[in-house]
Length: 185
Ligand code: IMP
Ligand code: MG
Image (cartoon, rainbow, N blue to C red; front, top):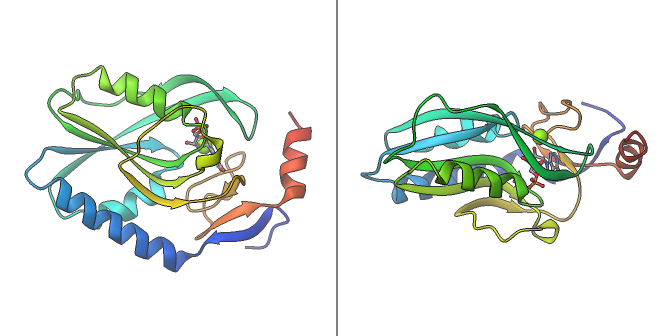
């Protein structure tokens, strides 16, 4: 796909495939004999979730949450609203939250508190991407795919204004497109 907003490719499809397979192997080893429930955070995590789940070779259930965090187009505020809650209780389950990206960490901090209050047996995070230099809160993700620099990224589930999720790689948005997005808010 050609589009002025698509800049440097930061993670190629091959690298995504290899890393996702590795993470699936680690999760398989760590959750043998457990009661694993994957909680996908809509919508950004769905590509990663579907791919990593194919490499998880222990029984697991799947549930989804949708949250929105107030803020500008490219910055979240930490004020999180639940748009869709889980279908089932978490009590006694080994819960693994699957997220697309940890940026400030505020969304995940909220989710960890909220889901942690529902008495799971364990609660961990699996994130495809992390931007460590952007972190505003201390946060432990047990599984992380790739560390990326402080760039706004699109593709493989990640969107800008709901577009570009279908790109088969993770790309930085161009400076021009980021500037235009900031002017618009
Ligand atoms: P946080 O609360 O700042 O950690 O932001 C988390 C959410 O913001 C992620 O789940 C994404 O939906 C979105 N987000 C953060 N950085 C990016 C990015 O570079 N591209 C697309 N979405 C992003
Ligand atoms: Mg998003």
